[in-house]
Image (cartoon, rainbow, N blue to C red; front, side, top):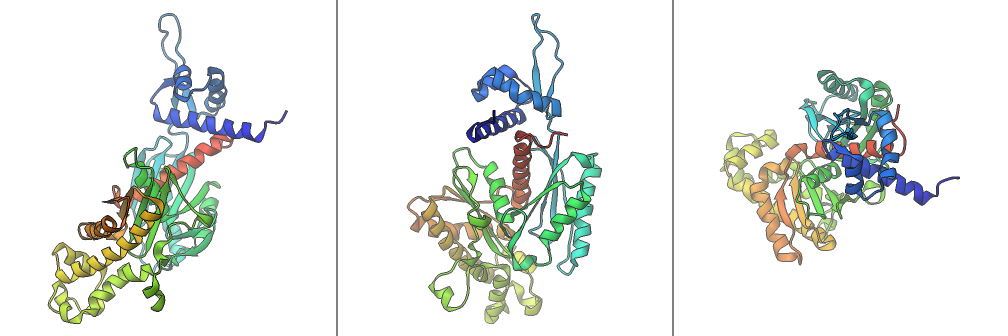
Length: 396
């Protein structure tokens, strides 16, 4: 007799719960799992047996205690591995993690903006192989390659559109090449802000259910967590605040990104020629002004730099206040290249949200910095692998 759809759904969810509980516990028993998950012992046994057979869980050979041999179970964290790659910056970050949530290894590589796509592909494949070889991970133990970058991915694998700063990456082709070169491994993409939002939420206090991660620098984007879960929106396009407008921006054919990005920041500093010549930038010819110079000027608390950043902070504060009022967000986490300006941006943002939000969100700097994306990718990939296991897949 075929199982009813609701029965199959419950079975998958219960097995997911067993996998999650096993991954959190160093060792446990069937009885302890039954108490923890409020499932019957026969149900626990039904879920455990195929996991033990596949090697996802390991039954420990313990000594007899008081005449009885305890049947202790340990989750095999090394059953599958995940490679996470955050392409947001010019130096992509690579990380290798296990199913227990542990980051085993990580490094970054430099890719110039002029680097052709073919060379970028080779760098990505080389980075994956370096992680596996350096940590003695067999290729067939790689369960997923998870990649984040700016842009919208309609189903986690296909582009709706790419951020203009990342047109050098042909994601769909990259996806296929990784599969071909890595034993047809599962590959999925996530918007960079969404991945970072998941990563940041994993590190926040237990009572924080509603969170927005705002990434600002080359562009502007946001990831939204509601009721403890990522809110992707239609076509995974939620959080694309780069295109936020108001009446003044409509008149100027502009949007939020054009008013807060690194490009605008540099142009705004260059444009104030009178103050430029009397500022920290006096020795830098305006055409050569780059983000590294702005960062250095900020470290010296250059007044021109502080004024422009104050303007950006107010602009972001207005957008964040509107989001917080709409969704009653508890916490806003600021990340991206503008991490280094937190000392000026966060107070400017808070000044707006404190004045205009009925429920004032906590405004904080990123906990993980540029690692937020890979932290989120490892969590998302781990869940995808767990789901495939719960559905009876991945059991060679």
